[in-house]
Amino acid sequence: MRKSMYWWLLFLVLLSVPQLSFAAETEPMYSMTEAELTTLENNLNELATINEEQKKNLMQLQTQLQISEEKLQASEKKSMKLELQLMSLKQTMTEQDSLLANAQKSLNECLDEEKAKQASIKRERNWAYGIIGILLYAYIQK
Image (cartoon, rainbow, N blue to C red; front, side, top):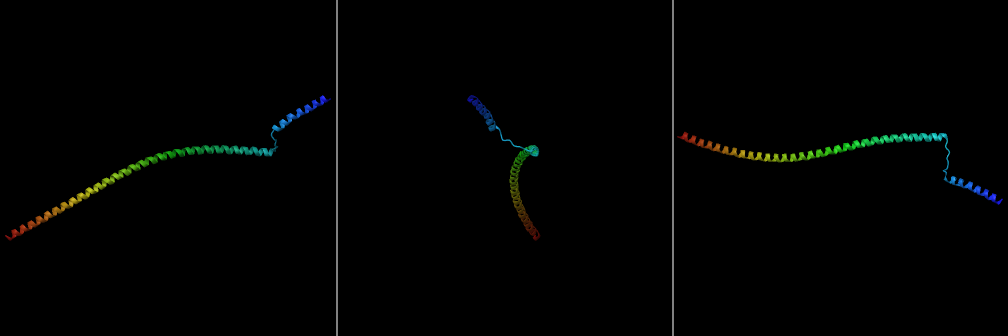
């Protein structure tokens, strides 16, 4: 009898061992009503829709960013070109200012020469009038 009791005891121990291992490995179960399940599914569907919209928005923003970067690069190239033109125009303006100053200086020299020439002509004319006047007086006196 003792042998059969050992067998029964061993049998009960063996039956309890798998139950202990299954009990330890299983996750706790939660119960959910159909309304809660429907709400959860609706929320998941709404989140999926929002996720798709966000993906579309992200793609649009990436496209806009790429376009903006291209425009920025084009603007930077144009800015560099305009800066080069500005430097060229400044250099041309400096050269023209120098030429204008030289022309003004030459004009002033010419005006001074012309004034001196006019003054010389006026002196010669006055001398000539004076000599003619003296000769005319001398002729009349004779």
